Length: 329
Ligand code: FO1
Image (cartoon, rainbow, N blue to C red; front, side):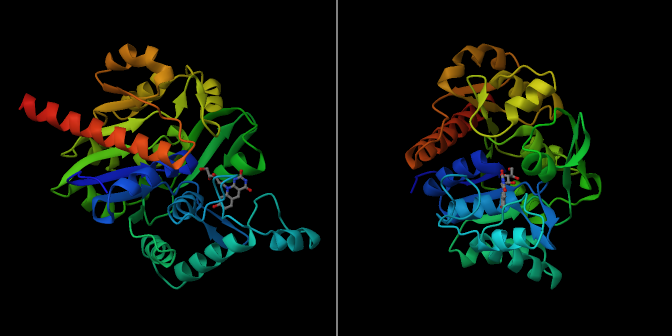
């Protein structure tokens, strides 16, 4: 464990976010790290409440994650899906037999009146996770994707249509009436806050839904500790998922600088620093011109030690930013 002091918050969604969250969790003990998760990907399917980004994080932190897909459980079997197919049911969204237990239990607890925050804490604890995982909100926010084929619910776009339709925009339905999880507000305003890390998640599908909650942008901008983001784009490509395809379709340059520019344009004043891969060293000056400090380090996370190494770089970067801020005062 680290000699880091203070408390950290990480905003995450998807597989890339969960990888860095795992690295952070190996360095920081539970009382020093809170993980805030996108729930814009959540949906009702086959009568069940599915929270893909929460589950990806829960399975990753509990070493239960399917290493081939990055989502779902390891050692999975698919008898439920096969039986459902035989009965003519909807099979475009793959729910493994072991994973199914998670959705059934979550749905039952939610219908019993528990909040998503309470249910998440209970299910994470059942899998021996000690770090705090907070859904961004207990209210329903649903990401929708505007495409050349019209509006699609996020999982219809992502899984059913395999991200094929060209994207023209996003909507975070319900966000304007949703309340930020009060535990997130408390975790940001904690006196010992040492830094906030925006994980290398898809900016449009995983991070913007969190930022769309009323008051979230101001909360992060006014945080007493530095805020950094890690680029999900490396060498003009996304490590996994449709980030770069989306950028192309939205007529944005496909680069780490464009991700930084996106955050700077939509959430001015939130970021103090931006982490890019060594392959993107050529973007450094351009990002510094956006008034951001830049950390260049390896960001591709293949092994557990890659995840821990990136987490260490993030914590060191935050420490440097805190020092610079103190020196300025
Ligand atoms: N992603 C897929 O590409 N195909 C699937 O069939 C699929 C099923 C699935 C089931 C449970 C779960 O928690 C996640 C699942 N995912 C699947 C991943 C998920 O849809 C995406 O990773 C996220 O929503 C994007 O961050």
